[in-house]
Length: 260
Ligand SMILES: O=P(O)(O)OC[C@H]1O[C@H](O)[C@H](O)[C@@H](O)[C@@H]1O
Picture 1: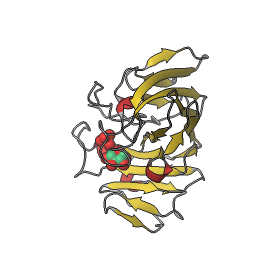
Picture 2: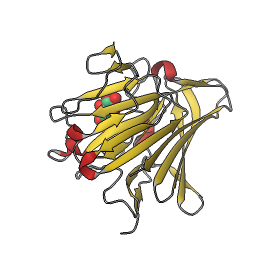
Picture 3: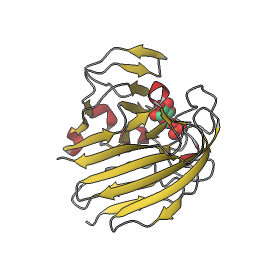
Picture 4: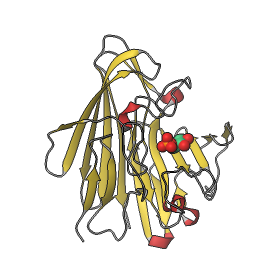
């Protein structure tokens, strides 16, 4: 089978990727996903910027920032790569700003790299949060293992409190965690599909792990489809947001490799 790659101009949203040699998609998308000015595609790689959720003080909207629902400009790119550009006019602190976002994708037979570069075009400093909110396809989230986070404490958004490191993530209900400091690669070990995905990140020590489970499943997921993905997100939010001086840039990268 030949490679499948799909990307929307709205949100510069990569909605599908399956390398030619892979038996299953690497990225999950909902069977009833839609993309509009008010609703982001459910799946693929939503770009959250220049804030995450409702931002550092909880008052930003839309949730996860305007980048995932705005129409981006398509830039020229070498064969096999894509580049998109968007300028947003508000920073994560709610201040008027000029922040250029450039989103680039590159891939080979086994890896897909997505990179978001934020550049402050304004005269004053700008606060930027961001996440590459990747939905990785799995055979059944309740039967996978996520490796590489065992030693890392996290903030449990479900409990609303910090939590100590835990040996294993049990999926099946709502899991929504912000791991604060993780440099090593994270692996999704999927025995059902005899496959391991390795996720490497640059420009972010945080990783968000999310699956909604059955009870918190959003309306734009098909029946039972919560089992078919796990989000492992390269993230910089809250205390890890970056303050960009005028002309300063920050690059956030997530690279997934099919290792077996
Ligand atoms: O439904 P969405 O706006 O796409 O957000 C989906 C999820 O994104 C992140 O993983 C957040 O940590 C979750 O709290 C949120 O529920």
